[in-house]
Image 1 (cartoon, rainbow, N blue to C red):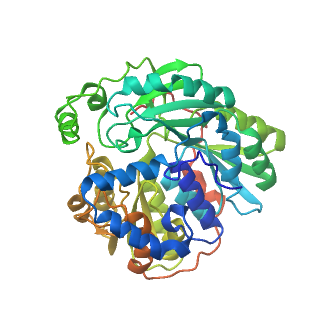
Image 2 (cartoon, rainbow, N blue to C red):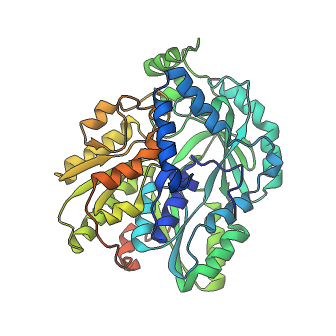
Image 3 (cartoon, rainbow, N blue to C red):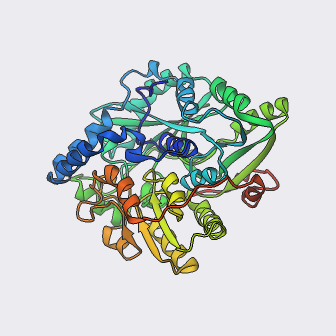
Length: 456
């Protein structure tokens, strides 16, 4: 199936699905899977030209390249069609297990090691709009009421999390509103994929990120979330501070702080959190077909990263990889296929912010020394609150495919990261057979119970 025109290429779920599916097919993930590899020479020239522009034209290119993917007419958006498009990426064969649930880069590496697919619960549908101040969350909420009604009426099996983050998503939300939906039921495409792809007596792993966020509930299946995981703290999002005031001043705003709608509930975090209603539908189908159901639960997106890195370290030692090379990846700038082929140890970071830099720094301190540390960074185009600067990353390792002078407006990184990694980590190792599912047991929540208390 062709890519639905209302799916964002920069979404964590869609990019991670493609990266994993290509890895399971023995293929790599150049240019975030958006363009064919033969276009790389042309795109390198385009990226170099964009990087050479002054700041304002650079931001204009970034904003309008994203706006091209935003949907002008919401009645066209079908979450069932998105689900079918996602499952079509995976090689058609029998698998001992399938994962389904929260998006997570470390989980992608985990699934790759065991040779099993993952189906995301959450996806992003960007909705085109203009004329709303990116710092006016209340105006974004009011604008979206009617589009949200249309979207939910057309897609009864999902819950809508409208997200507004004027720190990290500042450029994008000038021309779009972020509609993230979470599946409440599997739906036809996911059910058919599980029935066709799972071995008899196979296992469905529910991926349960317990992260919750304060939201404004606007309906039974509709919440508004202000802010997101990354640089600013919750207090800064809702009450301001020196860093927020400086951020707003940098971008020419007359405001000193944001004044978002008052939260009246807690909900699974829009991008990373798991909505537990889907688990009931998974168990219903599993009981019907005799599948096992296990749960992988964790409190925050990066919680799996050290554990997955440790597993890769042990696996590399067993297959005779003598070098200890750590590859730190950021958001969707990732390469599961070449991570395994080069004998690297993956450490996935949720974004390019200071909390992720501290997480990497802590892992290096606790598990080092490493022969080499490579770092691939997502460039989102904004000097946002809590951004970890290039020199901060360079103290932790060697930047791979990143122009330190252009970062965080290094739009060429999306073309360079793949080729720079292959050149930097030159060793090659066979992939070998997938690990047995018994080695996945330490990641599972034995009680298969979901705690409602984990919050940001």
